[in-house]
Length: 256
Ligand code: ZN
Image 1 (cartoon, rainbow, N blue to C red):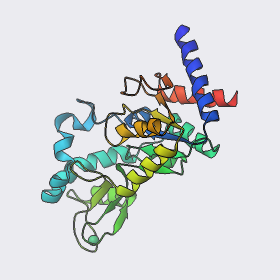
Image 2 (image 1 turned 120 degrees about the vertical axis):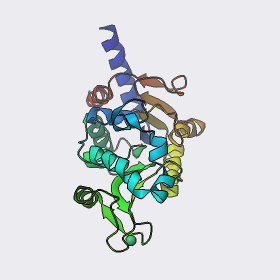
Image 3 (image 1 turned 30 degrees about the vertical axis):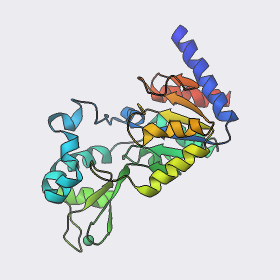
Image 4 (image 1 turned 135 degrees about the vertical axis):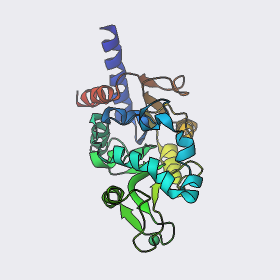
């Protein structure tokens, strides 16, 4: 009972912070998609990366030198992400945006589940599986078409015009982050008087530096994440239960 009472007090506090803030931005990581059945692939020994090192296989150099080998592994990631559905945490964040209570969502996730849940302003700092691009002509191919290509033949999906291997529009290891998305993320974080980190350990660049940007601009930080983050000591409030239950509690507190 004590834990339940403490959780709801924290949910009330976060609801209060959201009501008071002029500009709130949400920052999400792998933890927001775990309830959709998507394991955090950086967690050792989980899922399809169990037998390979993602840092080695999901690397831009492997894509360039051995596109068939790259796609042999990456196609499994595409197939695994392609059929997942948004969960209550994605839906709660979309609802907060609909109510005008958050400006948008900055995410490290490439699974596009925020958009599918109805979030409109989504800044995907690591790109998304929504499309692949041809490195030769720049032509874009939708996920559904790429999935169909992967089913019809084994190697890399290819541009129909150039016959060049398509590259996922996600940031691979060894690649630069998309400049426009990073600039948008920093602008949102510096204008925000409240930044809420959700389902992120806030340890991976660029997401790791964004709460600091908000704090340095005089804003506050709140955390809805299981497990420690480097910002726990400076956060105004931390909700450390299940991410779906915690965000539901915050929505309920906003209704109350
Ligand atoms: Zn092409």
